[in-house]
Length: 239
Image (cartoon, rainbow, N blue to C red; front, side, top):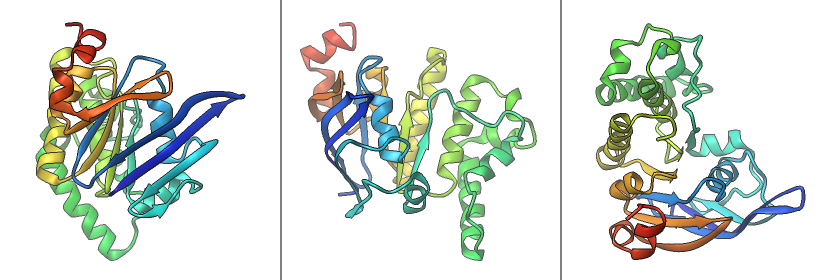
């Protein structure tokens, strides 16, 4: 098991945002956590990357307890995040943004791995190669989201955390970005945990999914079954 979360709780000023959440991800899976705004999805990812410290529970990664580890340690272990709203460095070029994802990889082998990774990413994201010398501020919203994903992938992570990737994008761009995530999982074997309000798009590309409501996991199962679950269709798919 690559990621095992058991009884995770997060509290803000005495109020719990997550209530004993438990989930797991096997290597090579693409797993979604769906839920409405305010359900605790972003808080969950922030706790997994080390930006929020839990008030209870255990987070294990690749068999190692990382509950108390800081974010830079988790990054070295192979956990990377694509934050919501892309958050690229607008005053840096596309290439410079990508190199920020490889920060700290200074050894000879690491530099060679980064070069190989960059070639693969440019084949997956050709628009980024065409615009590698442009400032990130000149990219469209969808292109900035692609840059954010590629930047997180350049260090060849073992687990990619993706936060609300569809936020603010037009429907046609949402489809493109989700297909890129599916391609990274399918062709590169990248393990992905995706949190999303767009339940339909995320379930279509996922193996399994969890439903998070006001800090609690209320439902879990195979994504295909969830697409046909009446509770999911009514609450999250508008059917």
